[in-house]
Amino acid sequence: MPTQFITEGATKLEVPELERFRTRAGDYAPSLTPVFYNPQMEFCRDISVSAVQVLAGELGNIRVCDSLAGVGARGLRYAKEVEGVAKVIANDRSREAFELAKRNVELNGLASLVEVLNEDANVLLWGNRGRFDFVDLDPFGSPAPFVDAACAALSRKGMLAITATDTAPLSGTHVKACLRRYGAKPLKTEYCHELGIRILIGFVQRVAGKHELALAPVLAHATRHYFRVYLRARRGAQRADELLAQQGYVSHCSACGRRRFTQGMAAGLPSSCECGSEFVHAGPLWLGRLMDRAFVHEVAGDLVKRNFKFGQQELVLLSRCAEEAEGPPAFYDLHGVARRAGASPPKIIEFIAKLRERGYFASRTHFSGTGFRTDAPMDEIVKIFKSA
Image (cartoon, rainbow, N blue to C red; front, side, top):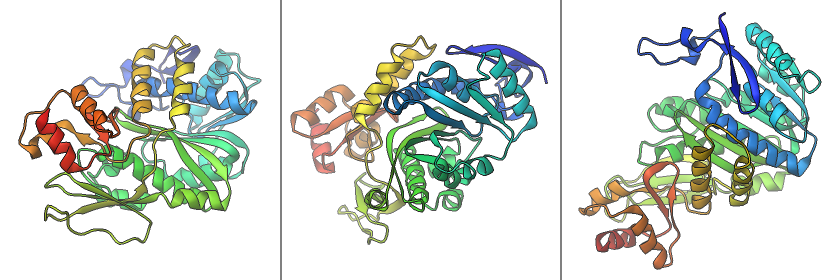
């Protein structure tokens, strides 16, 4: 396999030669390489480094598992760029990936800190119950097959980070696939990516509940082709029950844009909107907050100290996440409201200011450049919209 040397953050990596694995359209295709490496995920890995640093700053001497390591990019970056990491396991069942990851460990002088394994991820995680403070699931496709084992391997106060690239099923394009993998019905709406992340979180929490583990999201973002969520662990049946009580359903009216939130797994769902049209439903999914503002600020505070290539873009994302952190579920789209209201869309900043003047929560959202999040009722949104 032809390879090349690159640098991410402060970490040197030997990776598949990018020019050799391109589609006919000229795009680099990670799925074509003998050992998986996606350069587009550097943005995500940068944020992960800062998130792990925040965790290490709190717990100290943490044990990290990069369970689906590929060339070892995530695990090696945690070992080299995060202070307070005691041990990193970088694992991949591919023999070629195992050999390349070992060379990358030597390249960075991390042999005393990083152990490279060549095992099935589920076998590794089940065999290390409660041993890891940070477990990273970054698969090609759905993380669903690995969540149960990851929950078992997580320590009492650890953090689980999950990437999902099967965004089409989660966002309502392939409904049956979402039902099979996550036990939930998605919905194709203007906020479908938010629903997808909430379905993913809800699924992970239900799996964690079997382990009497409560997993609360502290950061979640939809970027490019993937969803990424960070969930903080707390042990205890009561804590798990309290989180599960915040799951439920979103009922959406395609005619007027109203949405209703119903908490509870067995609760009755509304059938008709007050405008007379029928509701369609998504769920079960997580209805609580997607972000912990304090955690997001800490991650941004660490990231600003680093000289990452995409640092400014990453800070913009985190700033938007912090802004919307305490808002309600299911954002609105400016153009969608304009279409239903029969009016031209105002400037989004001015519109948000008017909502705030009237005492409502209002923010922009990282999910969409034309999206806004508010707890104002639909009638009030349309009224302010027309006056703006």
